[in-house]
Length: 87
Length: 283
Image (cartoon, rainbow over the protein chains, first blue to last red):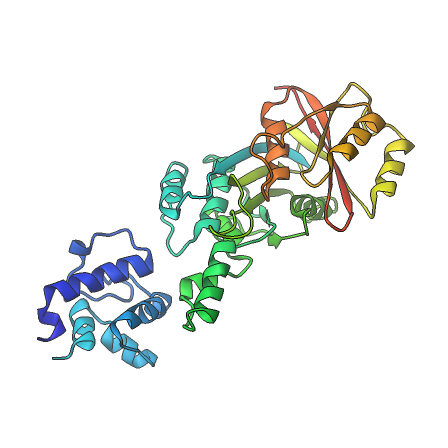
């Protein structure tokens, strides 16, 4: 099952992001399709947050190795979940 | 260098960052993210000292500390050498010595000198010394001077009962001041300090108090009391030794003593001494 179809995985990712990035929001407030990074995005995360998440997410056995990949993978919770579990 | 406000924040070592964030919300609406315990201790103490007043935009921040970001430094070293992994970026950034005073200055909207100072058992004294050097020629006219240290991580060789953050707000202007840092003098050894004490009465006997830093042995304290003829102001028994205990004692004197003066003597492990003289004005 693709990650974007697994609500438990997506909830785990939201909690990981909240914890890793020291955010004061509830996991349920994060929209699966909403942008995570940049001004005007739902969380307003930046490149340092992306680095923090890229280290924290290694517990899933994945590595994000370059910034272009990072931007693409972490665009939203759905894209992030699909990266963790493509199929 | 006139003292206009002081603050004390003492916390048990187990206080976690979330608790400190809640405390901080009592002083400022500014949200803080990516901050660690050390930075939060600094912010709580500094904001408690300022208490909503607006500082001059050119005010400086001197943050003194014995150990700096101890917890995150420990985390980063653990991640690198025990877990053989990359350090978490927030932790890595926060190990830099000037992160905490940066957050203090940013949140208080001040753009003056911003320094983190450590000085081998005499950190707070060195911060006062440096601030006076900046005040005397008029380079700085307003500053926050703080002492911040977190307790060593659990399981370490050293256990301390408390950790803390202690700040004074100083200005060149006297109007409205509650006291004054009248003297900050360094000595290479005990004999040099004794000679200074004998040159002229540091404070007139009976007209002030004597306090000694945590590293001054008991028998030596008795000797300083005999030499100066001053009554003792003892703050060391309140919480036992901890890294910012000198700043605790100074701020306690300024917060609780009646109108009087204080001679504070401290030494470090290398046998160097610093004497401070503070005056507390009547309210």
